[in-house]
Length: 275
Image (tube, rainbow, N blue to C red; front, side, top):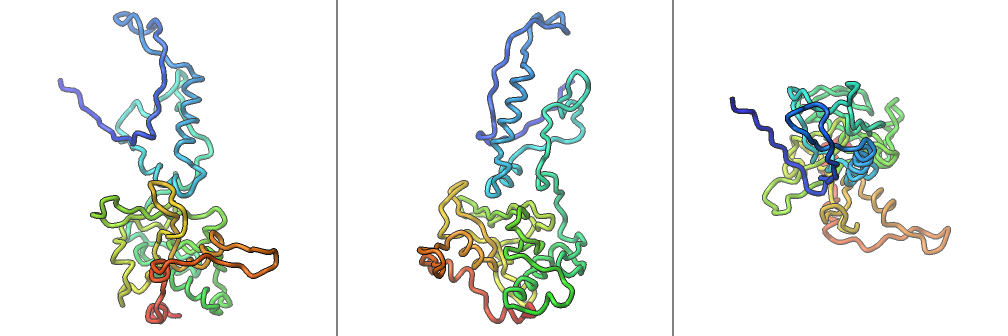
């Protein structure tokens, strides 16, 4: 009978060669020799492969993680097991973003700021109103709501500057496809159409979107750092501010016109979001 074939695609930079030793076979008499890998070599390769995913780098890890192939549960021999039947090549202390399960657009979720429940597809707009109210020094937090941090995630509103959510904007190199977002946030809405969400409308007034900073140096894939539109001032102060003399006023670099236009929030948008 014809055997089933299974094909996977792995980016070249995530493929790691390892040399094997030719040893006498102890299980199959028809094959006198077989390939053998030492436990030490396999353990070292596991640690090296994991480090190449850059698990401690917010701008690289989500993308590398999504590039890894996944296997259907019907494959009985994966994950590999050792002679004692235990899973081999196990990574301890996996970051939470690697374990998070993505939600559907219609998933019912609760706002971390005010506790109101709504669909995942509506949460970004809802959180955007909280962020703008905070930026405009609203007395919203006097109403018993959770206090927002200085760098709130646009998906969920939790502070991203204290080891929280990561979000990265990925552009199509050929410019033919919609920009997409990668994130470890529990409330990440992967099905969002970027161009439509970035444009103000009465039905979708919030334009708080991940943007590339034109001032930041290019990093992964030749792209610049990602920040949320409403967090533009925080990004400038945390990444691009300087003090010539201690105690003096903070100075900022010249900002490109494109940066100003892309981060501008109209009064019409603020009004639509209740500010």
